[in-house]
Length: 282
Ligand SMILES: [Zn+2]
Image (cartoon, rainbow, N blue to C red; front, side):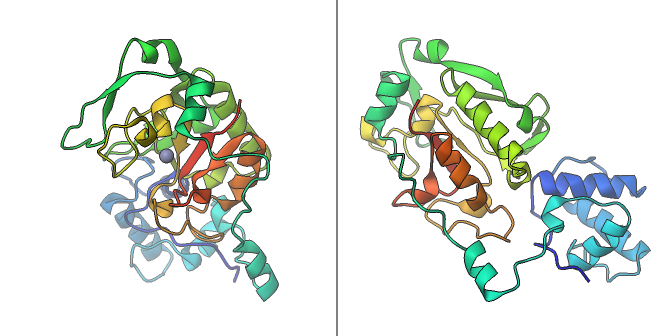
């Protein structure tokens, strides 16, 4: 039997879940909320139904055995097609952490001011958004645009607690960042790596860095300029090790191309932020 990457189960969210849901629907299995990319109780029931039909143990987890049967029925989900590297050398190579880029410096607030324009702000925390700021003087109207990213059409957006599909693929970002972000996603797609992005977690977001409450300029998050975006946050959370190759949500394969496109990866910060990519030069 072929070897497959990871299992899909309750709590997972992303494009890989959508592909599974679409497959289950094609199998004639009723899915209450359709292919919404959110593996909840309805998807678990649908997987159980599939398992029952196929004579597999009905635990509601879509793993290697289920994938092997499904592939025979036309299931295509890239993350399930590639075997886990087997030899020690291949494992070593695949688990390698991306090298820090030689061509880029981590963007500081001063650099972001220079690249994207300085703004005045006031600190406006709320209980649910303790880092929130308000940017003053019309800077947002002058600087922030809504831009379509074709690779994000129907991507799962996980910015709020209720995930939704990005039907138009539009993001809010700095007007100078828009063409760069579009170019980056196009470069990832050209390299066949689009499916590494499981879900989107946002770009422009005026706020201080997570965990800070002192409204100094050095505590501004670069999301405030709309020059940084986050993806696959659950699997690459701040301060935790990022997902390794072969694990669900791994972003390591995207880093080299991101660096070539002028983006710095948060996994290279002192306090690792593996979900985060930001423009370091224009
Ligand atoms: Zn971020």
